[in-house]
Length: 494
Image (cartoon, rainbow, N blue to C red):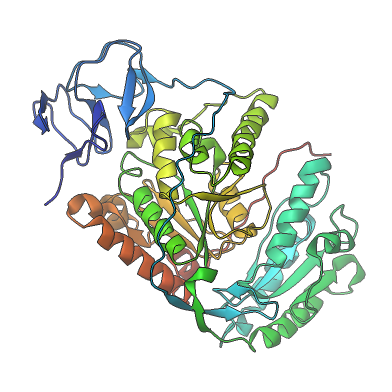
């Protein structure tokens, strides 16, 4: 039976409309009955009791802001009458609440076992420019090499970006680290590293970050040293394709699967449908020995203590405190407001404050203990739930997840987006209307959760779908031929 509203936690002072509700509708929640004073859009909140000016608004069982004026029971509560209650840097205390997940039965997917023991879920040829100056050369080689796709070679993709030169300090280090991470990613059966020759992050410099590599899998081309860089690049891609064709899919335990988790264009249902389903998926994968990575640090603000207290030990707690405070300092160092969020699209969908957005965002983490805290560009090494330093920007964060080792990114959305990342990016809708309207973008619909579908059933369906994607089923952005990447730009440009 389809629900029309939900009170997420017994302590909540608001409920959320799961479909548009009309003024005058009588709503009963437990022993509380209110009459809606105005129309309530889908995903938006209404008060379950009278609230005073300055009173905390409770949703998910936690404060998501405070009222700016008195609010009557049955009134719409949103940005016009509530605001954030967050401050700047905070002092945190470790109050451990980590609960181990019991192990569950093994599952397998069909993936590619690489020579170095790593596992990939795709067998693609990647063309990675060291600098933006050769972006067009990279895309020209990509276009001309499409005839080599076939057999176990599943795609040939270039990853243009505007960086690699005129950068300084940590900003330049981050570019080199992300490029090196992608060059080593096991979803690529072969990689052509395309340089210019005079850039700061030239091939010789980049090799220091790449470390040991298989010469059959990674080829290098310096354009300034070539008479015809496109012809020479094509010849190298042919060699890479010949090598990549030696790989075939084989059964691999899901304990070797690494899944990134990200949301974007959230709405009022994201924290009720899509994000909790991804959280349940994360717990299930971790119970089978697998790994998940949660990122977009600015969208943890206001819910960070929930993650901090799930840290397995105090050292991880301190790293999580630094993760949060470093990002706040990044904002203030650029004279920007820490809580300049949510976006206009978020607000239209029913999200009123950053706390509201963050409480929904962190639902993706499930209930597993935090086992690792990663710097931007750092490779994941701990199985279980990991937190990764990266901004909320969709392309930058998804690229960061791939660079840290994610084979697949689960991307929940209430608004929809067609973008891709270096790895298969599963678009998960929070509402069925989006799934219907943009079915060419959306891969999995969690809107059915408010239409009577059992949460455990939906979790299992998502798990089965991820296994299918890991075994070769293309997501919508792959079918469209999209491959995107973006690097976190933080410093000056010379």
